Length: 67
Image (cartoon, rainbow, N blue to C red; front, side):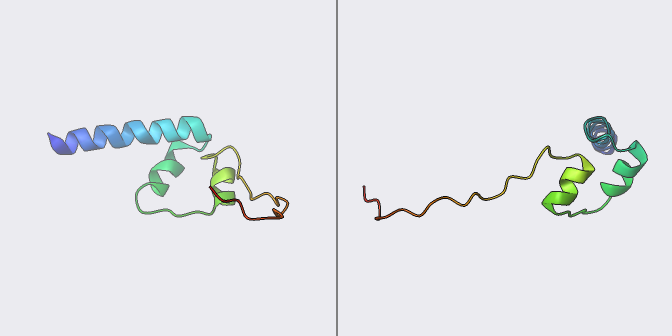
Protein backbone atom coordinates (compact mmCIF):
# COMPACT_ATOMS: atom_id res chain seq x y z
CA UNK A 1 0.00 0.00 0.00
CA UNK A 2 2.82 2.43 0.81
CA UNK A 3 4.49 1.76 -2.55
CA UNK A 4 1.24 2.59 -4.37
CA UNK A 5 0.95 5.80 -2.36
CA UNK A 6 4.53 6.80 -3.19
CA UNK A 7 3.97 6.14 -6.89
CA UNK A 8 0.73 8.15 -6.80
CA UNK A 9 2.50 11.16 -5.24
CA UNK A 10 5.41 10.84 -7.67
CA UNK A 11 3.00 10.91 -10.64
CA UNK A 12 1.17 13.88 -9.15
CA UNK A 13 4.38 15.86 -8.60
CA UNK A 14 5.68 15.01 -12.07
CA UNK A 15 2.41 16.19 -13.64
CA UNK A 16 2.59 19.44 -11.66
CA UNK A 17 6.18 20.01 -12.75
CA UNK A 18 5.32 19.27 -16.38
CA UNK A 19 2.37 21.65 -16.26
CA UNK A 20 4.24 24.55 -14.65
CA UNK A 21 7.58 24.18 -16.46
CA UNK A 22 6.23 23.40 -19.92
CA UNK A 23 8.51 20.37 -20.14
CA UNK A 24 7.12 17.11 -21.57
CA UNK A 25 6.10 14.59 -18.91
CA UNK A 26 8.62 12.09 -20.32
CA UNK A 27 11.48 14.54 -19.69
CA UNK A 28 10.23 15.29 -16.17
CA UNK A 29 9.98 11.57 -15.40
CA UNK A 30 13.52 10.95 -16.65
CA UNK A 31 14.96 13.98 -14.85
CA UNK A 32 13.29 13.20 -11.51
CA UNK A 33 14.31 9.54 -11.50
CA UNK A 34 17.72 10.45 -10.04
CA UNK A 35 19.36 13.54 -8.54
CA UNK A 36 19.39 16.26 -11.19
CA UNK A 37 21.42 19.33 -10.28
CA UNK A 38 21.37 22.51 -12.33
CA UNK A 39 22.65 26.05 -12.12
CA UNK A 40 20.35 29.00 -11.58
CA UNK A 41 20.45 29.82 -15.30
CA UNK A 42 19.65 26.20 -16.19
CA UNK A 43 16.72 26.22 -13.73
CA UNK A 44 15.38 29.35 -15.46
CA UNK A 45 15.74 27.76 -18.90
CA UNK A 46 14.04 24.59 -17.60
CA UNK A 47 11.11 26.64 -16.32
CA UNK A 48 11.52 25.98 -12.59
CA UNK A 49 12.11 29.62 -11.71
CA UNK A 50 10.99 32.92 -13.23
CA UNK A 51 14.19 34.89 -12.78
CA UNK A 52 17.66 34.79 -11.29
CA UNK A 53 18.27 37.53 -8.76
CA UNK A 54 21.76 38.97 -8.98
CA UNK A 55 23.62 41.00 -6.44
CA UNK A 56 23.33 44.76 -6.84
CA UNK A 57 26.35 46.99 -6.52
CA UNK A 58 25.28 49.21 -3.64
CA UNK A 59 27.25 52.34 -2.76
CA UNK A 60 29.67 51.86 0.11
CA UNK A 61 28.78 53.44 3.41
CA UNK A 62 31.00 56.26 4.67
CA UNK A 63 30.93 55.04 8.26
CA UNK A 64 30.09 51.82 10.00
CA UNK A 65 26.58 51.58 11.34
CA UNK A 66 26.36 50.70 15.02
CA UNK A 67 23.24 49.71 16.93
